[in-house]
Amino acid sequence: MIHAIFGLGLRATVVLAGTAIATFALLWHAPGDPALAIAMARYDVVVTADVIDIVRAEAGLDGGFWPAFQGWIGPLLTGDFGRSSVTGRPVWPDLVTALSYTFPLALLGLLIGMGIAVPLAVVAARHKGGWPDRLAVALASLGAAIPAYWLGLLLILLFAVKLAWLPAVGARTTAHMVLPALTLGLGAAAALTRILRSGILEARLQPFLPAFERRGVSAGGIARNHVTPHAAIPVVTVFGLELAFLLEGAVMIEVIFSRPGLGSFLVQAIGARDFPKVQAVVILTALLFVTINLLIDLLYHTIDPRIGDHDA
Image (cartoon, rainbow, N blue to C red; front, side):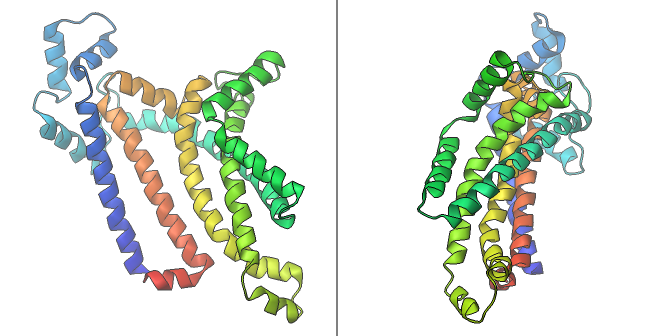
């Protein structure tokens, strides 16, 4: 088990290092002068060449790619995300503030998705081949086919514009979270329904289940002690990764619904070529994926110890 955790940690380090280098390289080689973008975002006026040169020196952009990268990655290794190239403020407090809006939205979206997916999948698996099963599969396929941004606009038109039941933009009240969370949740429900349905059906086809039935084990006992653990493995995978994907999806949804959070934080940072802010979001997202993958592997071992023994 310790050997497996060490291997996962090593792979996580490689992923994070590669992500940091790739993102910094993309920002560095993007069209336009990053010093000009930073200066215009900082002063919001037409800037002179002298001001651009000063900004370039302050941002560490005058020494080449690798010196600039080392100047950013060095403090990061000690937990310092640096200061914004535009405002001069520390990046970490602003990032935490943005995340405080995005994480509850993603979590609520995941809960909505699970609340829809679990009953749909159970009913579909119980009536395999029947009309409830076909309806559940059709709804899941439809949900997977609709882009999140288009679904968000449809919900705005229906519930905010036509019915005037819910607010469409902002984050002032709890009601402002309903439409964006519903947009995320409906998309998550599509993936979760299909995976959960398949897991339940596969678990029910295990060859040892008829033996338990012949021994007089109740249907509830079989479902609780044997079907559920087998069906839980793919669900754990999708549940963890779906939360990470919803955090990413929330970035786009926040832009559509004009909510504060990682969406506006990232869009503004990219437009201003604010390297520390963009890198902070990317590193945080990569770290989230890596951590979730590690937790999923540990849960695998808890659900089925044979998986951990095999990996060891």
